[in-house]
Amino acid sequence: MENVIVNLQIFLGGDIVILQDRINELESAIVNVVEDLVYTLGFYNTERLKSYLEKGKRNWSSAGRYPLEELAFHNIKTNATFILQQDGREVVRFQYINVENGTLVYNNQQNKSGKATAVYEIRKEVYSSTWNLRFSDNSLVFETWKDMQNHVLTTYKYDIGEELVDGKKVTS
Image (cartoon, rainbow, N blue to C red; front, side, top):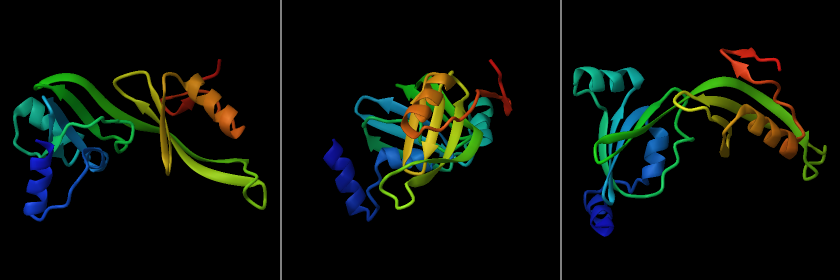
């Protein structure tokens, strides 16, 4: 079945798009896994997705069918909402909101100065208690702020500070 889909895309002159890449570029979507296929309905934003779900408006911006592959949702755009379904039934939702952006300075012996910088974004997943730490080339998920803080301290010798709730530091 996979070859049929790929061949059809080539025959129609379309680019071969990997599902994970498509997920990462959508603003919001419903992702429905049915047997060995994944169907996507993409929306311009979360409000249009909600309007589709609540009012039945046919306002999606894209639809796709892809061969099943392992998916990760921690690279989705900030504020995008994704609903993962299995055979049309909702399994889980994902939405990451921005909590903090920053630049960390850390020791790096490969640079002449012995220092390096990395721009990061910390995001909170709305429908669970997980945290997401994103760099330009890497995205990591942590169960707690403390786990994320320990990772950054261990890896970069940099303290991201206390947990943020509603944009304010929480003191222990």
